[in-house]
Image (cartoon, rainbow, N blue to C red; front, side, top):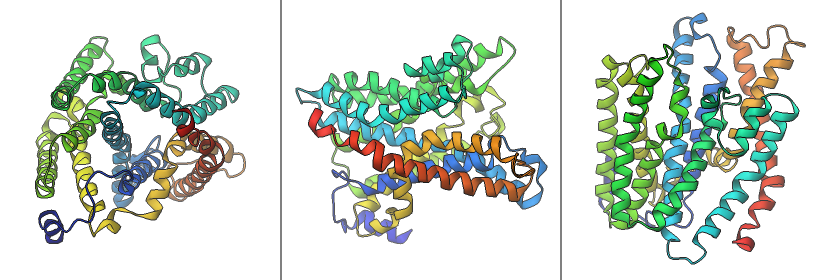
Length: 380
């Protein structure tokens, strides 16, 4: 920690905080997708209570992996807001942004929807709504979220639809106020949603997937992006801000235990559960920027995590399909292979499915997605 204080205060940095290429962000993407894979591999649909002792503690801890999505939100808010602010004065502002987003997102997304339809993994009603990026609000139409990973993509798409206009016509200082309002208001929206759902006698946590209940992580990243572009923040002050955010996150988590912040079984706990993690992830992003622009950049440029970060979009889309196909087909060849109540089959499933998913995502990025990405400069 003394070394970190030293680099944060003595000006030993070798690059500015904001750079055209920031490899440490790929590391954070890699960490986020790894968290999600561990969650789906070792916790999701696993009866943890069947385990004992250290194994139960370990598998229970994998619950935190679901928050990898929230880390993605913070990163997305930071990156997209930065792109928009820096291109605010361009005459092709909207065309450039939306063409580039479409080339990045749509090709593999449409392939996944086609696979869901061809395999009858999801009902056609869900797929049709997903075509319009309404995957996260299908319960409002009486349709279950048939492929869970799509909900967060819908939230991000709604962000892409609305945020560019706000950034285009708003000064950075006003943008900061808007971000603060969203950070405060979103947990209130979740609380209101909880009580509205409780009136029907059934509270499903799917209400947290609705866009208006998922904006605070994006707003945290967006606020940091706007601050760094509006103010000349000294590195020492950014380090102190990150430390303060960590402290606030810890205090909120500990203080929220009596209110159900861990279990989500109480209204306030449900509304606030992800808030400490959004603050912590924003702090991690600050520290990563500090390290990534310093002589200690090796600490945040893990080659393996950067590889995962580079293929994270395709990996996120495909990995749950691979897990489910494995569980469906393996039972025909290995009787206990799909039994998640036994640790060896559980870990075997994780290794095989994660490996297959990474391989597919890598091939997709290199030979399917990359040709579309190369069109960015030509079409925008």
